[in-house]
Length: 242
Image 1 (cartoon, rainbow, N blue to C red):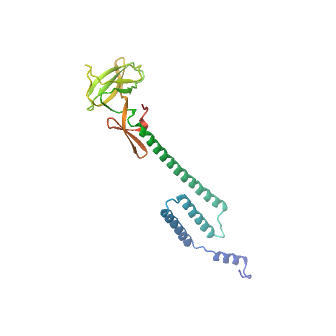
Image 2: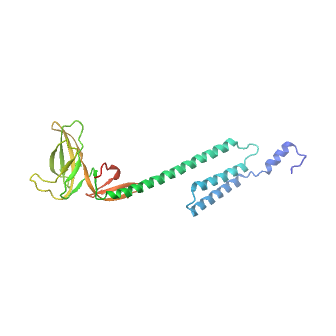
Image 3: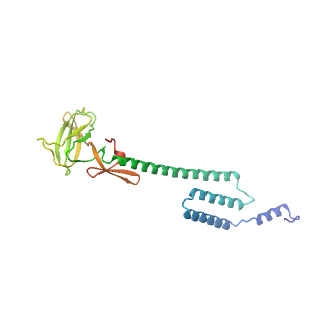
């Protein structure tokens, strides 16, 4: 109880001196609280980190209110701003976690679905292992050209065949037969499309070929398909399956 003989100024000074103003104690208490929260989170991984951080924030805010200067207290609007800021950060963290979980779920789902692609043929820009069965491709021609040729190369990169193409056909089947009608040797072959305008070569680009899938692998967030020649392509690069 305050002595009745003191003036209002003395009373205010007395109250100010009696309040705990040791900022070092506040810092120590905050550090201890944060350390305890971190330790609890590490011992119990199932405890949400955001929840632990929010409890720490509330304890720090309480300590701030208890140890503020009574002659210059913190405005209530400042408290509201601090709470709103933490709430915004908390929601962002939760949103990021949710997006990460959704991405992982979609990736795992896609990987399981693409397992059904094994032994099926996908359209890709890659060499093909030829074993006597026709190789089917979808040629793409440069704009404004009026003729095209298919160039076939063996695994050493040497051209073994050049065939004229009918540009009205959306798909081409290469039978693997030489000029004398005999079948070419089994092995890996690559294909390219040469586009011409009035007999002048305008461009040459790899052909999109239907290639058998022999393996599906997940590499991080990407799904890789191993094709008949042993090469790998990203699943996102596939434009057709048959």
